[in-house]
Length: 133
Ligand code: SF4
Ligand code: SF4
Image 1 (tube, rainbow, N blue to C red):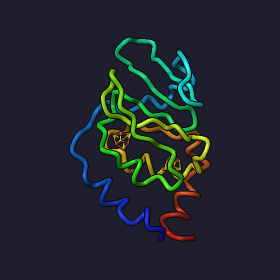
Image 2: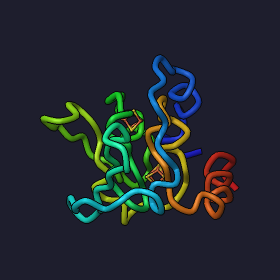
Image 3: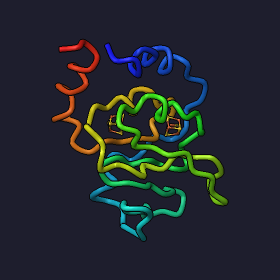
Image 4: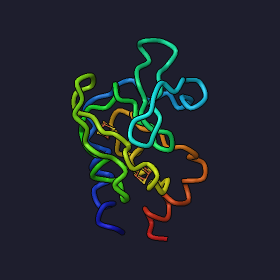
């Protein structure tokens, strides 16, 4: 098992807060407001919906509690720490093009702030990573 997988279960179990989860339908029901780095910035229909960064890897910034577990866990370093005026300390999927769709970030995020595109096709990748197949 790769080193970065070693603490996945511990990370996931260390859950202390539960914000509103990301809207998994954002790619079809939200609007692209702008772009940041190489990814879109989405806004929901309601003001309270908030903001999502990313397309392949979406991060709902209002739900991010800055635990940095996704940064620790991601095998391809998709996420970067980002300090903002609007959301404080969050993560940005700045290198989402490097995502291998393993879903580990979704598993470790304590607030369900992340959604990875095409989950159905990713389960085999996650399984192979978890079990070394
Ligand atoms: S699905 Fe895997 S590779 Fe993609 S951002 Fe999440 S942890 Fe990183
Ligand atoms: S997206 Fe989730 S796992 Fe990543 S820093 Fe924010 S709360 Fe933590």
